[in-house]
Image (tube, rainbow, N blue to C red; front, side, top):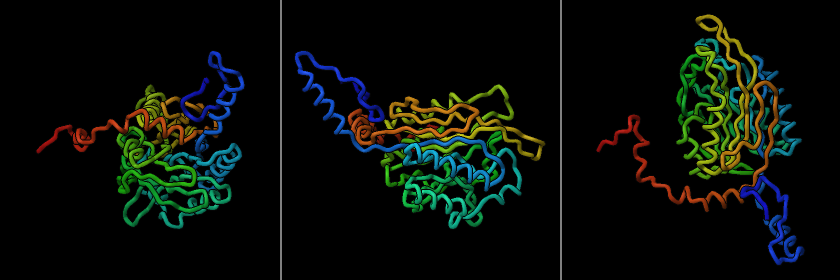
Length: 331
């Protein structure tokens, strides 16, 4: 029997063992197909943002509907999709883009959409919480229920990506959300460079990892292109934890007026879905709007994850160095 070890593939060829009647071989194939487990279809969206909330939310809804038509159960929209990626500049007026989590208009609209279509939608937004501000994501279940939020833990600070001006470090810790279709872990953009975040979510039971992002060119270095590095790191998270992974990024050139003149980032898209060995299953290009879709059998993947031994053979008692900044363990 020629089968892939993971459930996103269907059986395409039946090989008859020596001296085995064809009827027996076929019955084995049929039995294996019937044993197929819990399937879920995930989707990554990719589009260019304008700086108008209504336009962007309408685009997101259109693409969510398209993903649903393709059979998607869990649909990931890119990071901070309501407008331009404003963190190219340090401007007080941009802080006014933040809104409180409760009764947030975009979250409310996506709750209605999720309930209508019966899909799960993580919704990225700029959160105001009294005098604190966060880069947050609300997880909307398939019946429209708001399952709670995750606040971005790792906040970057560099040319074009000056997020520390706007966002407090997240205080939720890494979380897992039990949705209708799967237990999911969701982290945000810069979080994806940290293997500890992925491992923490899978240790808590995440069956699929989701990363909404906004990443592209580097204003200070036109020769720096991180797209392949960006993908490989997340492919490593999928392979190291034996879970599928979904990454959604934006496309298009966005120009922001900064305190030092104009700054521009060309976002490189390349949204993708990776399988549980880190293999890329679906990937978008760097220019076009996209709706990526892939199916996984979570029961088959769970069985393989357990039998592989990665989580059986972990040694948390030896990992205390990970709790330090400089690698020195002091008594």
